[in-house]
Length: 212
Image 1 (spheres, rainbow, N blue to C red):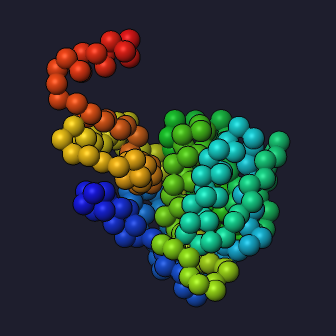
Image 2 (image 1 turned 60 degrees about the vertical axis):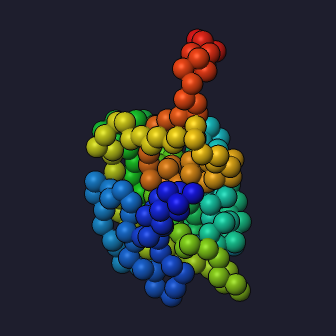
């Protein structure tokens, strides 16, 4: 559990606190290209997340994260051709952006709204995780609007394999801790989870046979 707490502290260390002017964010891992822009985007009760239907799951993960961090229940609106409008968050795929690869993305936050663009679904997911890092750590009682720092981000991973090993063979770890860990790993953009469950060779052999 101490390891999980340390990882979450590392990821959360750079998040923007709710304030009149958002704190310049420290994004983890540092994107390939990152520019802090002037102004802020106001996240409020009327904020809508616009997305094409195939990527609605990623949009819902973002909506749930916004609810946990701010108490704001942003609506997810699926559209055949989603477009950025004032006060909205847009998630869109653009297959022409081949330079972004499988996991790359761009994120633009302006006073009018936020746009995440990727060539593939994985990139859209990781762009959403970067936007999560602009959210406050938790809701402030009585506050209904939050300002997110305006940024311009373009990112592609340096390494294709970004893994984490969890050894549960000697220590009991609760389901809640596992789920929290996976969420923290996703925010840190790790893409491989290796789970060491048993040490006995015969049990490992049975597990291999089951997988085959």
